[in-house]
Length: 179
Image (cartoon, rainbow, N blue to C red; front, top):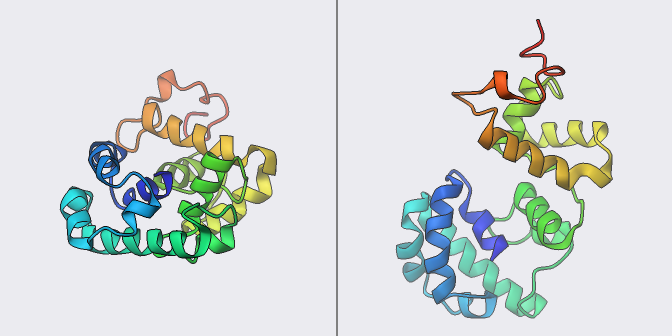
Protein backbone atom coordinates (compact mmCIF):
# COMPACT_ATOMS: atom_id res chain seq x y z
CA UNK A 1 0.00 0.00 0.00
CA UNK A 2 2.88 2.39 0.73
CA UNK A 3 4.32 1.67 -2.71
CA UNK A 4 0.99 2.41 -4.40
CA UNK A 5 0.38 5.55 -2.34
CA UNK A 6 3.83 6.85 -3.20
CA UNK A 7 3.27 6.19 -6.91
CA UNK A 8 -0.02 8.09 -6.62
CA UNK A 9 1.72 11.03 -4.94
CA UNK A 10 3.56 12.07 -8.12
CA UNK A 11 2.33 15.51 -9.18
CA UNK A 12 -0.37 15.28 -6.51
CA UNK A 13 -0.96 16.55 -2.99
CA UNK A 14 -0.77 14.28 0.03
CA UNK A 15 -4.27 15.43 0.92
CA UNK A 16 -5.64 14.11 -2.39
CA UNK A 17 -3.76 10.79 -2.05
CA UNK A 18 -5.15 10.40 1.47
CA UNK A 19 -8.70 10.82 0.14
CA UNK A 20 -8.24 8.29 -2.67
CA UNK A 21 -6.29 5.51 -0.97
CA UNK A 22 -8.92 4.34 1.55
CA UNK A 23 -11.34 3.65 -1.31
CA UNK A 24 -8.63 2.07 -3.45
CA UNK A 25 -7.28 -0.16 -0.68
CA UNK A 26 -10.69 -1.26 0.46
CA UNK A 27 -11.26 -2.72 -3.00
CA UNK A 28 -7.63 -3.72 -3.68
CA UNK A 29 -5.93 -4.35 -0.30
CA UNK A 30 -2.75 -6.01 -1.58
CA UNK A 31 -0.69 -6.85 -4.65
CA UNK A 32 -2.47 -10.17 -5.19
CA UNK A 33 -5.85 -8.48 -5.52
CA UNK A 34 -4.52 -5.42 -7.38
CA UNK A 35 -2.78 -7.68 -9.91
CA UNK A 36 -6.20 -8.94 -11.03
CA UNK A 37 -7.77 -5.48 -11.22
CA UNK A 38 -9.03 -3.96 -14.42
CA UNK A 39 -7.02 -0.85 -15.19
CA UNK A 40 -10.23 1.05 -16.06
CA UNK A 41 -11.64 0.30 -12.59
CA UNK A 42 -8.50 1.59 -10.89
CA UNK A 43 -8.58 4.69 -13.14
CA UNK A 44 -12.06 5.57 -11.89
CA UNK A 45 -10.93 5.48 -8.27
CA UNK A 46 -7.68 7.44 -8.73
CA UNK A 47 -8.85 9.89 -11.40
CA UNK A 48 -8.54 12.92 -9.11
CA UNK A 49 -4.80 12.29 -8.54
CA UNK A 50 -3.86 13.40 -12.05
CA UNK A 51 -2.08 11.34 -14.68
CA UNK A 52 -4.52 8.63 -13.59
CA UNK A 53 -4.32 6.52 -16.75
CA UNK A 54 -0.56 6.07 -16.52
CA UNK A 55 -0.67 5.64 -12.76
CA UNK A 56 -3.42 3.00 -12.93
CA UNK A 57 -1.61 1.06 -15.65
CA UNK A 58 1.66 1.21 -13.68
CA UNK A 59 0.07 0.19 -10.38
CA UNK A 60 -1.68 -2.85 -11.88
CA UNK A 61 1.42 -3.92 -13.85
CA UNK A 62 3.71 -3.40 -10.83
CA UNK A 63 1.32 -5.52 -8.74
CA UNK A 64 1.41 -8.26 -11.36
CA UNK A 65 5.21 -8.25 -11.31
CA UNK A 66 5.23 -8.32 -7.48
CA UNK A 67 2.98 -11.37 -7.55
CA UNK A 68 4.84 -13.18 -10.34
CA UNK A 69 8.40 -12.40 -9.27
CA UNK A 70 8.23 -11.68 -5.52
CA UNK A 71 5.24 -13.71 -4.25
CA UNK A 72 3.29 -10.48 -3.73
CA UNK A 73 5.90 -8.91 -1.45
CA UNK A 74 7.74 -5.66 -2.08
CA UNK A 75 11.44 -6.35 -2.66
CA UNK A 76 13.86 -4.79 -0.20
CA UNK A 77 16.34 -3.95 -2.95
CA UNK A 78 16.46 -0.56 -4.68
CA UNK A 79 17.66 -1.98 -8.00
CA UNK A 80 14.64 -4.32 -8.09
CA UNK A 81 12.19 -1.64 -6.99
CA UNK A 82 13.14 0.86 -9.69
CA UNK A 83 12.45 -1.80 -12.33
CA UNK A 84 8.76 -1.73 -11.37
CA UNK A 85 6.53 0.44 -13.57
CA UNK A 86 5.99 3.88 -12.06
CA UNK A 87 8.74 3.44 -9.45
CA UNK A 88 11.65 5.83 -9.56
CA UNK A 89 14.41 6.65 -7.14
CA UNK A 90 12.23 8.78 -4.86
CA UNK A 91 9.55 6.10 -4.56
CA UNK A 92 12.15 3.39 -3.94
CA UNK A 93 13.83 5.50 -1.25
CA UNK A 94 10.46 6.23 0.43
CA UNK A 95 9.41 2.58 0.47
CA UNK A 96 12.76 1.20 1.61
CA UNK A 97 13.19 3.85 4.30
CA UNK A 98 9.66 3.99 5.64
CA UNK A 99 8.62 0.35 5.35
CA UNK A 100 11.93 -1.41 5.95
CA UNK A 101 14.21 1.09 7.68
CA UNK A 102 16.72 0.78 4.83
CA UNK A 103 18.60 4.00 4.06
CA UNK A 104 18.93 3.64 0.29
CA UNK A 105 19.10 7.37 -0.42
CA UNK A 106 17.80 10.74 0.67
CA UNK A 107 14.18 11.19 -0.42
CA UNK A 108 14.02 14.33 -2.54
CA UNK A 109 10.44 15.50 -2.94
CA UNK A 110 9.36 19.09 -3.58
CA UNK A 111 9.79 20.02 0.10
CA UNK A 112 13.29 18.55 0.43
CA UNK A 113 14.32 20.13 -2.86
CA UNK A 114 13.00 23.58 -1.93
CA UNK A 115 14.22 23.60 1.67
CA UNK A 116 17.66 22.15 1.00
CA UNK A 117 18.23 24.94 -1.53
CA UNK A 118 16.65 27.62 0.67
CA UNK A 119 18.78 26.60 3.65
CA UNK A 120 21.98 26.50 1.61
CA UNK A 121 22.45 22.74 1.86
CA UNK A 122 22.72 22.40 -1.92
CA UNK A 123 22.92 24.57 -5.00
CA UNK A 124 21.63 21.84 -7.30
CA UNK A 125 18.17 21.97 -8.91
CA UNK A 126 17.61 18.43 -10.24
CA UNK A 127 16.36 15.88 -7.67
CA UNK A 128 19.02 13.30 -8.54
CA UNK A 129 21.78 15.90 -8.11
CA UNK A 130 20.29 17.13 -4.84
CA UNK A 131 20.08 13.55 -3.57
CA UNK A 132 23.75 12.85 -4.33
CA UNK A 133 24.84 16.18 -2.83
CA UNK A 134 22.87 15.68 0.40
CA UNK A 135 24.12 12.11 0.72
CA UNK A 136 27.68 13.47 0.86
CA UNK A 137 26.75 15.92 3.63
CA UNK A 138 24.44 13.85 5.82
CA UNK A 139 25.44 10.67 7.63
CA UNK A 140 23.77 7.63 6.05
CA UNK A 141 22.24 6.66 9.40
CA UNK A 142 20.31 9.97 9.27
CA UNK A 143 19.04 9.88 5.65
CA UNK A 144 15.58 8.51 6.47
CA UNK A 145 14.90 10.82 9.41
CA UNK A 146 16.40 13.84 7.62
CA UNK A 147 13.99 13.44 4.71
CA UNK A 148 10.98 12.98 7.00
CA UNK A 149 11.91 16.00 9.12
CA UNK A 150 12.54 18.29 6.15
CA UNK A 151 9.26 17.24 4.54
CA UNK A 152 7.37 17.89 7.79
CA UNK A 153 9.13 21.25 8.24
CA UNK A 154 8.21 22.20 4.67
CA UNK A 155 4.56 21.35 5.26
CA UNK A 156 4.18 23.01 8.65
CA UNK A 157 6.56 25.96 8.89
CA UNK A 158 8.69 26.69 5.84
CA UNK A 159 5.90 26.60 3.27
CA UNK A 160 6.58 27.62 -0.30
CA UNK A 161 4.31 30.68 -0.26
CA UNK A 162 3.88 31.50 3.42
CA UNK A 163 7.07 30.54 5.20
CA UNK A 164 6.97 31.52 8.85
CA UNK A 165 10.57 32.49 9.56
CA UNK A 166 9.61 34.23 12.82
CA UNK A 167 8.40 30.92 14.31
CA UNK A 168 11.09 28.74 12.72
CA UNK A 169 13.42 26.96 15.12
CA UNK A 170 16.11 26.98 12.39
CA UNK A 171 16.19 30.75 11.91
CA UNK A 172 19.57 31.09 13.62
CA UNK A 173 21.26 28.89 11.04
CA UNK A 174 19.11 29.47 7.96
CA UNK A 175 20.76 31.80 5.44
CA UNK A 176 17.33 33.21 4.56
CA UNK A 177 16.83 34.67 8.05
CA UNK A 178 20.41 35.55 9.04
CA UNK A 179 21.06 39.23 8.49
